[in-house]
Image 1 (cartoon, rainbow, N blue to C red):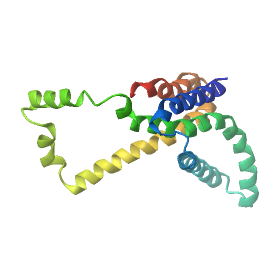
Image 2 (image 1 turned 180 degrees about the vertical axis):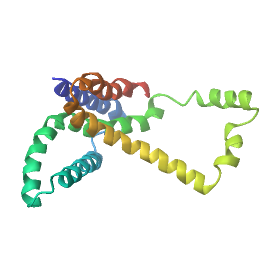
Image 3 (image 1 turned 90 degrees about the vertical axis):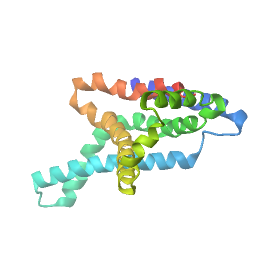
Image 4 (image 1 turned 90 degrees about the horizontal axis):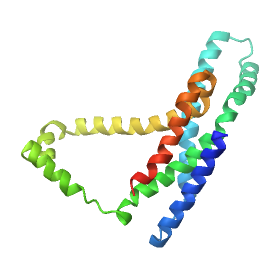
Amino acid sequence: MFDWAMLLCVCLIIGFCSVLLAPHGISPLRPGSYINNAMLYCSAGMFFELYFYSKDLLAARPDSPIKFTLKRFRQRWQILKPGLLLILSLILFMPNFSTMKAAIPLFNEFGWDAVFIQADRVIFGTDAWKILQPVLGYPIVTSALSIAYHAWILLIYAGGIYFAVYQRQIGRRYIAYHPSFFSFPLMMWPDGP
């Protein structure tokens, strides 16, 4: 039931975003974004499955790896199938979240920027970037921070697959973590605009 409710909420959000952005000539319905997002979720799922497949293959050491693989695929499909609605919800939701986040200036100017800049000057006596520049101003440091940031983004995809598919297998913990993981982004998306 939660899976269908999640998909319904995502569809309502997409409709709401479409209504909000239409006067500005922006459409949140971009098939390319959905396809790219689906590829990222599928890639994350394949990494999980490759890990479990390798572990099972090494443990079983079957005489016929092809028969083992086909049998295992049928078994794993039964585990993967229940999470597909939630994964579809994420595939549809994330590009719309990004579109709305990029559209924040259309609805609300960045009025707090000046306040935060002034707070930095009061706290540090100067702009915060001037203090951080001697430490972070090297290409290797900037590259390391960029890699860490992009790795964090990839965790969103791995987390979605984990909670949609694999957390279901664990049992009781599913009840505590699963709805929170999927409900939180839906509740927080309007916070930006």
